[in-house]
Length: 326
Image 1 (tube, rainbow, N blue to C red):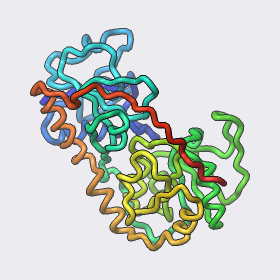
Image 2 (image 1 turned 180 degrees about the vertical axis):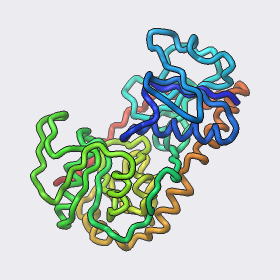
Image 3 (image 1 turned 135 degrees about the vertical axis):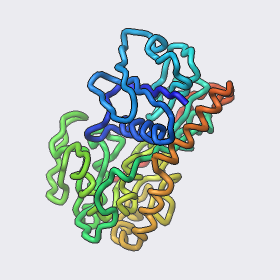
Image 4 (image 1 turned 60 degrees about the vertical axis):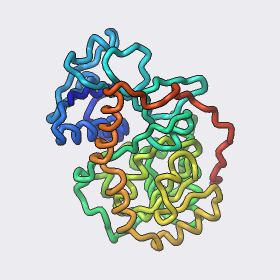
């Protein structure tokens, strides 16, 4: 099968790059399976296992898709009518009034249901790229892994939780002084900021963590931070919003809107089975499994069927998310 994967960004990702890492590993697995993969992505991209074409946003997408393509996989909503068989993965949350093509895929069951759909594929990563021991006996801190400038990621709540149990917090994805979302300065020396990290430095910090603190205040579409942390045997302590109840079963962490429940769970982090958590992440959220699921979607669309009976549309969420108070 000849597959063209399209996104308006550079690959590979050097730091966080959630969508970029997902499509990189997807293409890599498809190529391993013998499929011909082409990326239509931004200038500056490079790849050793697939062909690269540079996207020109001043031209129609149809004019840039290779003529021998069997299926096009977009990773952003497309307004243009695409002449080739295609699917679109929506990676983020939507806004009121958003309507999507019938051949749309979401990244978790909850994400799909919030759009009136049952079409989803879990993200997967290539765990062979995580080249350090996944289970480390030296546990130094808890960690927060997200763009700390986004209020919905709730760094304030995470800091409040570690303070309540007198623990240390490593913040991966933010700085102590931040003006992006209004002035914010974190004075506590129990909290250490590492900025936007990638690669070995990030892996080492996660591997030495007692657990991921993830008290989000929105419906998380998926959460690569969750599966990366679980790969390194970290239990997850967060809120039960979006995909979290799907990914974080009771044996892998605790989800609650109550600070006292989460604080108690942090004190008992070692009760969770590290080996079981790590094996669950490896078995359930790997890039090979993701590629196999997408291949089934591709085949269905190429055969002339739609992935959704109706056009998915955002269903407005009326329930306010509870805050974890610091």
